[in-house]
Image 1: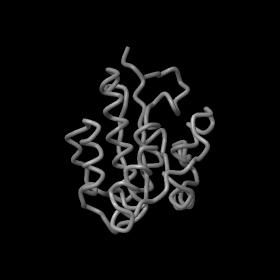
Image 2: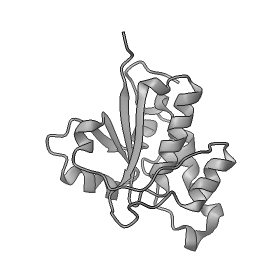
Image 3: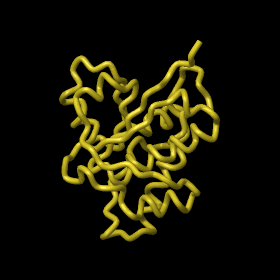
Image 4: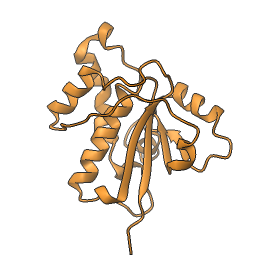
Amino acid sequence: MNPRVYSILFVCMGNICRSPMAEAVFADMVAKAGLADQFEIDSAGTSREEEGSPAHPSTLAMLSKYKITGYNGRARQIAHTDLSDFDYVLAMDRSNLKFILRFALGAQAEVRLFLSYAKDAGLVSVDEVPMVFVAVEGVGRFEARNVRVAEYAGPRVFLDDGVQV
């Protein structure tokens, strides 16, 4: 019997910072746990502005710092079909969640804030990963804010179907 495959889509605004970081960290954790065949992992943005762009250099630098290499995703906009194709659609903030929910009527996916699972479990006091403006705040602030993604991207935080890492 084949194991159940969980499909997870991480969503931020541009799909170049927060959601690709969550995708890469999550994929790394799943692979290290030997569960890669049980997950389909992707990311998308609510905006088309960055469509086709690679992850932001600061995102790639932070992933590299944590020895997560080889991420080569390209930004794409979330599609209505994603709400049926994925089991979980996890928005990084309320603005993204609101965008997704506008066209989620009849969706099969569970649509929630990414950190809501960690908050429900008592691991964090916030449920949003704030948007980062790297050019204004600098890489240090980028890393400090996005460590939430790195720390809470594991499947143990939001899956309660018996799959534990």
